Length: 268
View (tube, rainbow, N blue to C red):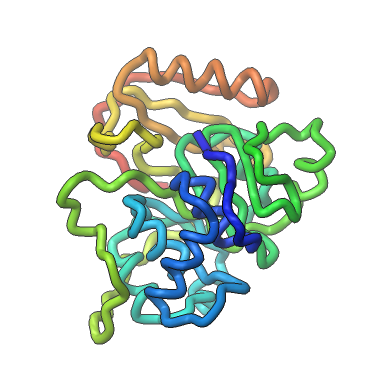
């Protein structure tokens, strides 16, 4: 679940960090200034946002990118982008906010669309106030504010999960001279197949990386057969997620099944 955005900074990047991590926006901006030697934060790149969230204990575990993203990464520092996203699974797909959010994907996401960041978490959205407001609200197409931005093209959507104690991916500072090449995926053609669902959990609990119960959300707007998968550790969790999703998005279809396959991008 997202947090209410608080703090003195008003830009969309620190606001997305505040909504996901539950910290004031001015603290998020201060971390970005320190990590990237910036005198002020008037705009945030995805590597800066991810590096700041890592400082607060959140790491990227999955991404959806626009097909042109490989040519224009929109990063403050290329080597930092390579280090943060090395090994992070991703799919390449052109979609709008409505196409992505209408089926209610699980997890906490920072979404870049039309040069603006919004935060999404298990059916709720929030931003700096330019589009949706600082208080988390359900993503609901009958809401005029949601419908007004539903056709905005997503540049990148990154899912973040809480880092486990001792997680080696939780790197505190941008390191120069260490450049890695992230794995390249097979582009998604019919839809998006996400890895294991990782939802925000209370402090001290382990973040689930696998799940026996698979919830398949049918994305009719992406074409016949398109689907988005989310995994849960128990049938109760899966049923609770479907119940929440159906309440806000009655037009979608959700199937629950037992599946012991490994999470990650599924073969097309």
